[in-house]
Image (cartoon, rainbow, N blue to C red; front, side):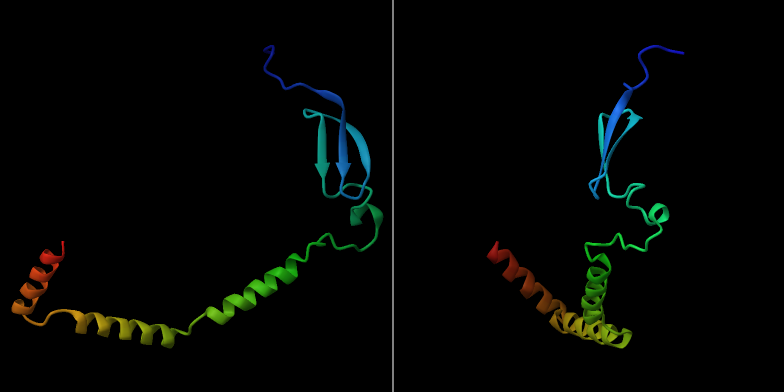
Length: 110
C-alpha cells in the first residue's frame, strides 16, 4: 500500500443528533451532525413519528395551489397567441414606401 494517501482517522469522532443524542464513532472527520439517529428513528424506537417538522408537505401544497391559479388552458394560450400575432401583423408596414419611411425615421433618431 502507498503511504500518505489515506485520510486521517479519528477513533473518537463525535456524532450529534437533532434529538440531542451524542455518541462517538470512528470516522474521517472529527465531528458530525445528523438529523436522525438510532435513538430517535422510528425503526429502532417502534413509534410512529413524522420527521417532517418544517411543514414541507403544507408548503408544497400551497405552492401547487398558487401554480394552478396561474395555469392557462390550451384554448386561452391559443387565443393570446392569436391576438399577439394579429398585433404584430397590423404594426408592420404594408407597402415598400411605408417601410422606407419607417427606415428614414429610425435613422434620424439615431
